Amino acid sequence: MIIVPEHAIDGLLTEAECFGAVEQVFASMARRRAGNFPVVREAIGHADALYGFKSGFDRDSLALGLKAGGFWPGNAAKGLTNHQSTVFLFDADTGRCKAVVGGNLLTALRTAAACAISVRHLAREDARVLGMIGAGHQSAFQLRAALAQRPFDRVLAWNLHPGMFGRMEAVAREHGVPFEAVELDRLGAEADVIVTITSSFAAILKAAQVRPGTHVACMGTDTRGKQEVEAELLAAATVFTDEVAQSVSIGEAQHAVARGLLAADSIVEIGAVINGDHPGRISESEITVFDGTGVGLQDLAVAAVAVDRAVAKGLATEVDF
Ligand code: NAD
Image 1 (cartoon, rainbow, N blue to C red):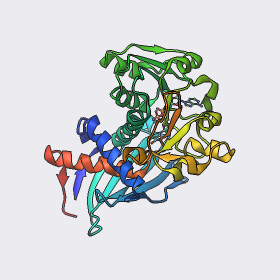
Image 2: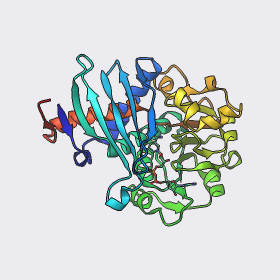
Image 3: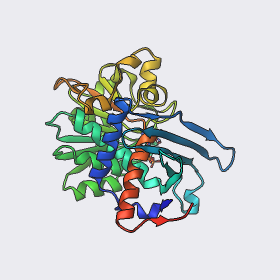
Image 4: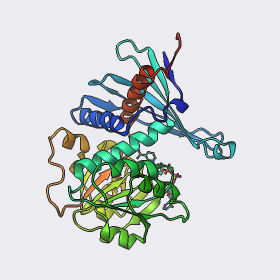
């Protein structure tokens, strides 16, 4: 069995490798070659922790396994990350455990890759202004991956809590792209692509603030009750997602579907666009929304690449198991 510890993940995979791995598994999901199993997420009644599993199997890549972990709110005081996860990969032919891989950084990378895939496939080709809503841990990863998809010449950002823009400013500077913190009205009026990555439980971005032709990637809503954009925005848009079952239950679309503003069967899996079975954006004035809920197969896909790279670079530990 191979062990790839958390500290070995940094710098192990390129952004392009993450993008490719997640794109492949989204395509397999849409062809029904890959499927996610029901998610388990429970309050364990200790340390205020939320603990669970996301798992699945991809018959194309033979990635089989699970990501286990969750949220331990007291970790920051101990100098640890509150979100903790570990990926376990199994041999699809024998069921033997193949690898244990640190999952914290991989989660950020696979989430950024999903957002970037939506920008690549759904944003207008002439998109030049990128709007970011949210400025937490994930935001810098999302920004870096999104910037690679179009020749953006400006980043506009908004966050509820002030003083959090440092990490995104650094990424924008790295890319030589001007960065400006703005009010939401201006962000919506000028951005061609908007990424939301917050822990909000109420709509931040209103439908009236988004202009025709915008691509909106909603990446923060991954739990029942969370919400980042007004349900009316989804009603006015063509809605794409990683997985429809998650989109309507824990994703951004849960609110529009519950209010009867959006039919669940009108939501398109982005894998269908990747496979060429759905045209994606069909007009310059269409609003596209990507509801990125985060599926277990994304974790398995990037973890499998991490194992290959760690073995190739001599960074993996092999143990008899
Ligand atoms: P974080 O705690 O580092 O940052 C939270 C962000 O949300 C900050 O910008 C904060 O200002 C903002 N925020 C907090 N409460 C808010 C409120 N009530 N209204 C508006 N904004 C608010 O978190 P993070 O690691 O950056 O993750 C952001 C979100 O993304 C989380 O909700 C997380 O669960 C989600 N997430 C989704 C996926 C996925 O695959 N879709 C993957 C990882 C994380």
